Image 1 (cartoon, rainbow, N blue to C red):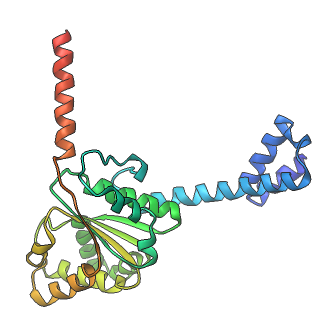
Image 2 (image 1 turned 135 degrees about the vertical axis):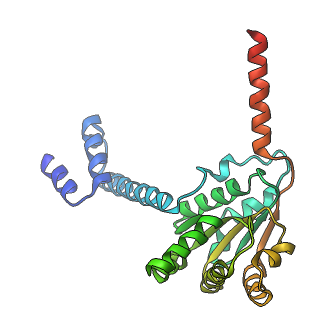
Image 3 (image 1 turned 180 degrees about the vertical axis):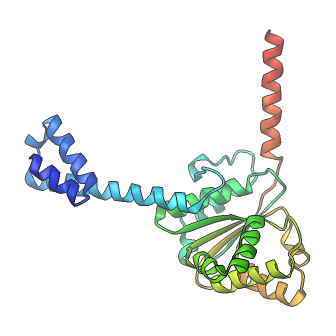
Length: 253
């Protein structure tokens, strides 16, 4: 038995080795048929590898929030629940479609985008979350140090790219060019989620250069799933709740 465990570990069958050892220690191996034992070991190894891959995928995605679809709160009616749940099946990624999330600051756009991204990771897709300001700043540095093509290729490889807080400031010529290259590379090949406080109708002004703006928006907005979130800022709600709890505690004292 110990030789089998040692061989499993040497072959990096860690899930199988762990399950085998636990089965021996619990005495369940005596109740398993050979077929049941093989199934149990194979399932354990599959689960182990899936979880390791998921952990790596989530780490590489660099999400802003540890969010999941199960944790979303639809009670306030900030967003269409049915639409979100339809998107959470990640079929839009298979169809190479985009999502645009708009709404006021603090309403939960980034959290919702991260939740959909997390679901995509669980489904086996490669995902990358990027704050728009940091994305364009990093691409400028990449142009300066010669790694621009490599960075573009890394973005292009992602099944789902999330660009958060787009439109916080107008794009300069270099950022505009970078956005055009990213969107052009991904058009019809992969999906993109963009969150923004700025309504889509004003994105021409954010991008600038009418011709380039037309080209970007034609590829990005056409046939995109659009969710306009409404309601009070969730951050403000949390701050108010914290203040109320603090006041209650002071009154008790």
